[in-house]
Length: 198
Image (cartoon, rainbow, N blue to C red):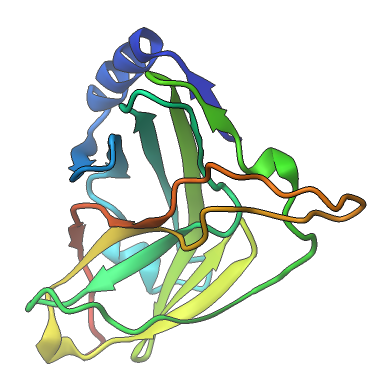
């Protein structure tokens, strides 16, 4: 569920989450008036669980604060992705597709007034079989990374992407939404412990 809240409520929530071993990284997007805070569990996943058929369940989220002086919209539709980087910091290619059971809706682009905060969850299951690390997202995104042991250790982070300043038109309407924040943001990464078969 996507949540919007005022700054005071969010501060209390972030403090409570920090107490249960969640790694929070707060980053400002330079010159954008937007603050991003990634909430990633530490450790991210159990290495033994990753090798099982059921995999390891991941619960992460991205908090976005409109720290500017004007209201703006943010996308919650196919805008938040898992991302993997290797030991050199290079992004590992992610081969993925999406189960597009529905198209975007106007409600997928909530308007945030200055000081308001939006929370976008990213949940899924990771499995590590052979040389493939597979992702099954609860949002319908499915994909995998090809893993090479000598390129590790690997780290996991979140990537937010919205490449257009408008959204729509939507099904049943000819109207479009303007004032959508657009750009890319990548959060800080946390370690992902992978156990390789011997």
